Length: 218
Image (cartoon, rainbow, N blue to C red; front, side, top):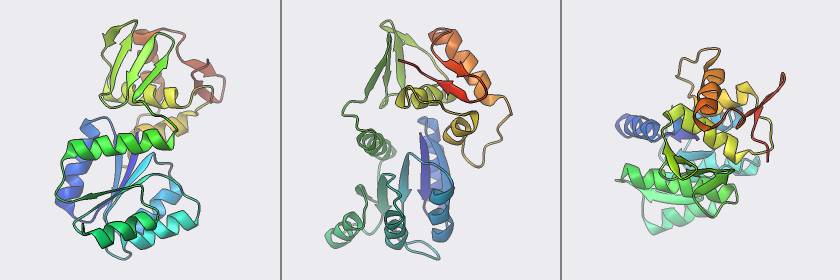
């Protein structure tokens, strides 16, 4: 899942980026409010972690701008300003969830997963396709009731394909979802991940749509 993180505390931001990457998320991190605001207008994200006290533009103003311009990505406000009045302001400005600092990384990940599920109309963390079952919370995959070991990027690719069944995803769209802006991405990275998924889950699991991209077809 692709996450936008807007947080000016470098210790917290680095910890979140590194920790969430290890949990299978792809994270773009910005420390400046205006740059973070613009990022959501340029790149598709599955969810946003937004601090309130930011340089150049505060989090509530950013959130209001996004909502006014019809950007409905789920937003988790993460801030040291945790009193009731500020939580109410944040939720009334369009936030989907609110978590005060200090926090546990596992709780941040769990809240992100829940927000992404709800935004996609899912009630369960389990996604089934043919004889494959994927758990969004644990990132574990089973085929025919047996566990399958996937790399983080293979897992992220499978997740995107499962969430977009019967929809063609281009190579460029998949690269945007799988990699952050800081990643050095080889020209055939997506093709390699597709090849590995086919070897592990079945050669016909992912359909190649000529000159357009890839899809899972019901």
